[in-house]
Image 1 (cartoon, protein in one colour):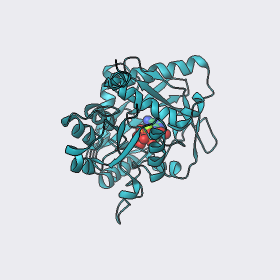
Image 2 (tube, protein in one colour):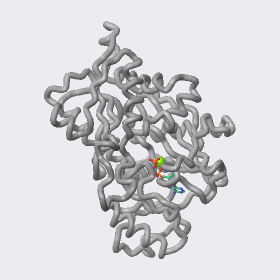
Image 3 (cartoon, protein in one colour):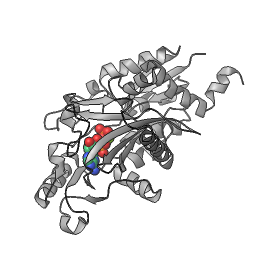
Image 4 (cartoon, protein in one colour):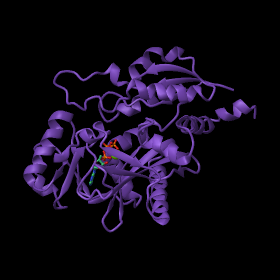
Length: 336
Ligand SMILES: Nc1ncnc2c1ncn2[C@@H]1O[C@H](COP(=O)(O)OP(=O)(O)OP(=O)(O)O)[C@@H](O)[C@H]1O
Ligand SMILES: [Mg+2]
């Protein structure tokens, strides 16, 4: 039987870039086209969709929401708890929702927190330190150069440009100060991993399942070496997604196994996407896990559906069904 599904999201159209903001200020939010794709996918499963909006709209309607479950893709506006806001509100009101809970979303949005969990669970991740404006960078840097500097708690390559790979203290200082000034947060400074790049979608709960590996191609190159993904490159669509990645089976299995380990390590639910860099010797390093990955057709999620040989809509419905099963709503439906 069809359900009434609330959709929580933050749209680019609702948050246009304001004068004085960086060009990537609303990068995390979904364009109307992606939201429409998600709505159609949910409707194709015989469900009725009620578009709610973000945490503020949810708060205004929450005592009278009238939905069976919320399908959550809301990124939140600012701060490292931004993704946790919708789940917290829903949890307080006992409304079931798809995806990870507030704790997992917070711990993974701040990549430095996630990396501490990875280290504790013996998951390979690039060496790192946290730096803020005014810190003594020479004292903090026990890694050497080249380094990669990114905001601690952003996604969609916000704050990442060709200047993010730094070779000396001058570059390091420049990027740390820029992130502090423009993104109002500390920098995560990592050992630069020279090599190739992959991402793996994971679905499920008791026995999470890794989907086919996606490989990133930048400017038609798979051997990225010193190259990497930047906000401008994503916006210009010079990043392509190859799925399934053309890599030996045993290496694909290794990445998939690691992706599931990461997913379990941070307590992900229903869906997640794990990003990797692999060095020239073939050693994988986990960059991050995205419990709220972009669900656009043209992104890694949509490519994964193609590789599985199923329509995009079916993969979106699979996420919903994982959530329904987790909260026992599929059984109610079947009358069990
Ligand atoms: N340590 C590193 N070494 C080399 N390249 C890196 C490193 N960290 C990040 N990158 C490059 O920067 C990109 C973005 O990094 P990361 O995935 O950590 O940030 P994000 O903004 O959360 O990403 P996403 O766009 O997946 O949401 C990576 O896809 C990779 O190309
Ligand atoms: Mg990433």
